[in-house]
Length: 199
Ligand SMILES: [Zn+2]
Image (cartoon, rainbow, N blue to C red; front, side, top):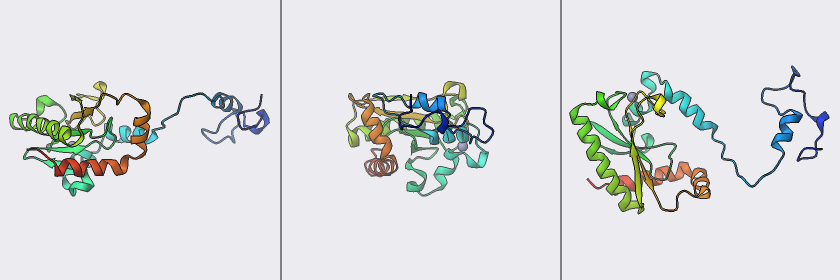
């Protein structure tokens, strides 16, 4: 049976062919890939680079240490407190996904000072009010992943996720649409949240 594009077995390198480029499809893999179905794929290899870089950052390369040293728009910073700040998530789970981080490079919540935990709590409340005022969401997921094993992408620098939720946001297609438009949307949303920040 020819593949979806009409090519046959002779048009593909054997799996053990030493001249085959890494990752090039073999007849078998092209066959597997050639069966169309109703699902669209969202390929996110950039996420892997982010995760790999983020999981073991050089101290100077920690994105949460670097961001506050930049201009707000360059660092995706929404709001700056005295000991903690609010930053957009570059790879949001939803539009308006922000994170609260202490300026200090500490990994887990128990290492934060009383002043830092108090300000993280205050900024969380302010972010909730601001996001709802600006975007009219219906709920939130809020939380911290502590350690790589718990899912923290940047495990060395404490950050609290605030993810706004809408009643209809479980639909797959809005997620695709948002993902396609993210670079512009993140800055748009960041500017809206910064301008509308409710202290
Ligand atoms: Zn850091």
